[in-house]
Image (spheres, rainbow, N blue to C red):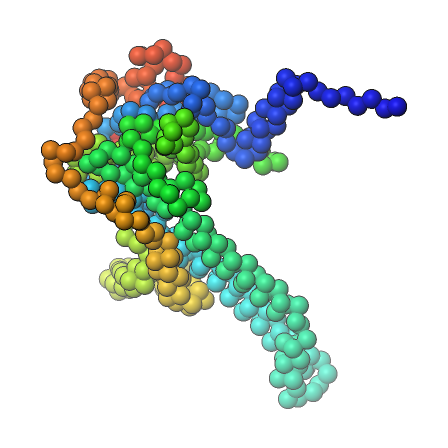
Length: 405
């Protein structure tokens, strides 16, 4: 009789915890304990493979904000004096379509060139004049695998285009009400809105190391957690970012709207439309006519500097079907624009000034002390360190102390 070993309950818990840790490292993230160990703004926590720096709760400034210092943001869907809708705009959708169409157009042109060359060589090899078109048609008719492969590639590309739009439409933007100092969000896959206090929102930037199989790479993530209705848990939003400063800027776009005067707010980036392409083409043509023209200087971002640059610019847009990518981008904007129920529309209406919610006394006191600390050259992390004795950590060295104009 074979006896099978069964781990105890404690051993099973340890195995499960180890499995979750390995999975988190594979996924490039580490879960943050927000309930059992409530964070504070400026706190730095270490975990396996990286660190986490908290920007909130109690939304304190992470930098000295100058007028117009944040600039434009493509994460602002809508903004007025009452609320801000934070999500993902259609900027970049046109480029996604351009990549798909360019790859397939180049593939089709390459195969046509190969067929033309093969038909020409076959005609010369067998000394049969006037058989060029016969060989060309036969090649195009018999090479069904090649055409099938090109069609499959096109379908895969367009599937990715549609899928990303569909995924974006599944998550409504988060609405921040400046006058009520509240946040409205929809949990993933739910049609029931949840409203939470603004000052209880938690935000952080996490860094972690991942292994590609050949090298270790550093990654960063912006995270935001909003309390659930029962106050016992959080709804969490995470998005990868290139740099720690990008996560900081993402948070400041939201915080400045809720806490700072209007001159310090970020501005919504213009959505991508066919007008975007027309304006870009007109600007390139004007600069090309007025500026110096080179023969051997090619730059993708400044095609107007040379003749080859302008030829490449127009050739690229012809191969990507001219305005098609921008039509798709417009469709993406319309398709993903979420409508809100009447209850949230009523909640989003402006309030009389005497009914506006005010910052808590604790937040005002901490903000005043932090501004003095920053005036002396400190940062949010060192402010927490001075008040709570926390180890500063490496992550805080990447936080910008001043916003750039």
